[in-house]
Structure formats: structure tokens, C-alpha cells
Amino acid sequence: MRRFTIRPTQTLATVAVTAVAIGAVGVGCGGGNDNNNGSSNTGTSTNTQATAPAQPPPAAAGTIQVSGKEFSFNLSTKSVAKPGKVTFDFKNVGHVEHDFSINGKTTPLTKPGGTANLTVDLTKKGTYRYLCTVPGHAAAGMEGQFTVR
Image 1 (cartoon, rainbow, N blue to C red):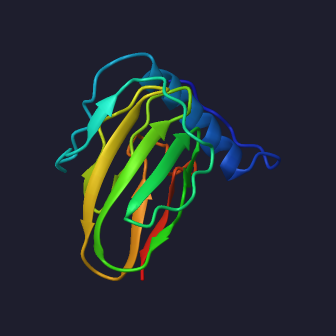
Image 2 (image 1 turned 90 degrees about the vertical axis):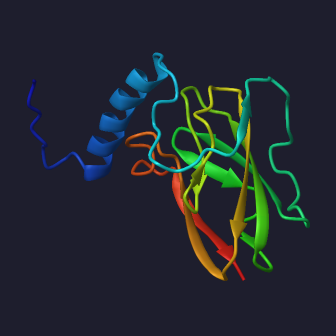
């Protein structure tokens, strides 16, 4: 294995992004969804090319539009007014496979252009971490906080 020397001019972020990019190439080169981390995948996945508005208005009934790409998520809203069932409609707008995980539930690994739906029961007020479970993606920025008020 080749060793890399970090120069003072390189930042930790540069090294992390480089490592994630190298890992993303391997993830994007094939393989199925073998990232079963013990959580149940209750979502559905399709690889349709349907277009959706870039910024849909926040949903009143608990449906959140989520787009994911290298290396960020964009949610139509990052909070709901009260505890209950919330559906996350995830679309992978990136160039490699991604998923969306919150409160122990994870969508199937979704190919570029594909979509997946995930319904989660957020029973308590508070913040819930969401992330992409592909190794290195959360560390590169594919994570955030969702709030139940």
C-alpha cells in the first residue's frame, strides 16, 4: 500500500474528500446493496428518470422531498411540527450510489437518477440525525439534523 505524506498546505478536509472520492469510485463501479447494517429496509426503490422540482414547497402532511448528491443532502424542510409518521421521498441526483438513513431505517442503495421512499415513525420531539451510510459519505458532508418540534 502506498503511503501519503500530508503537507502543511493540505487540510484535513482535502485529505478526507480525496479518500471519499477514491472510495466512491469503488462503490459506483458495481455491486449490489450489501450494506445491511442490521436496520430494516422498509423503503421501495426505482430507477426512473422522472424529473422533480429542484425545491418543492414544504409538505404539510409529513412528506419530505430529499435529494442527495456528492456530498450533500437537500431537504424540502428540515423539521415537522409534531411527532408522527414522516415519509422521505429520496432522489439520487449524484453520480454514484447513495442511500438515506434516519432513526435506524435506511432506503435501499439507490443508483444515480433513482428514487426511494422511506416512511419513519418519529415518535418523540427532538433532533434526528440523517445520513448516507455509504462508507465515507457522511464524513464528507452527507449528513444533517432533522427536527421534530
